[in-house]
Length: 312
Image (cartoon, rainbow, N blue to C red):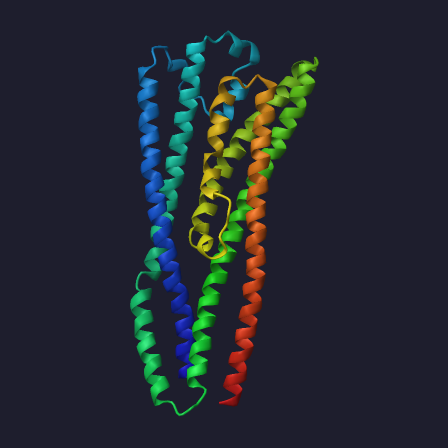
């Protein structure tokens, strides 16, 4: 009976901690959603105020921008139309981000439903366990209780670390793809500058297409990574401002769209992407080190528990 309650407590403590974590994530997403909503409204107003005829530009996405507008045609666009195009693409990206955030909020609300009663269940089990300890004649009961409490905390934290590492690896994958595409675009762009011809120019544009898609995916995954780090950061004090990573796509959407023909801007985009990749991989490495430490502590605790059970 005693061990039975211990096992239930371990699970409920994990659920209880997960509930707190999900509530924090939900609150953070809701704040971010309000900010994104304001950004969308601002861009819609900005686009509406433009005098240029934008009908021919509507529906152009970042994914097909570089392939639908050739260098010659782009150069012929006047400054006003270029600015309108930049706002149009920024608006589309902001709307995509809003959709991503809404999907994440729904997912978290669904997960919360499964652990919504964990606090009440935890309190009930604590009372039950205290009664068992008081009525137990075993001198080891209190020690076993303390070890079980520590075990539950460690297991819950290990689960958080594993989820954060998974989210970090997912972001790393998208960033790696973006870096590779931008590197290829950079190299083909350099060749294009030295008379590579239509082929090198087309390949450069194709790689910019891919990079834009990967950058959106990377931003979406870094958003999930940042939410996973909300509670973990309090324990291992991650020095990198992960929320700053969410602004990475803004660089791509800002000046690069307007003067994407400039090779230097492609080089800058590559450096930015590579910098974000280094930061994320560095954070994941720290999480993996912490996970190994906590797994070792858990194994020690479990051995001590077994020893007490065998003696009692």
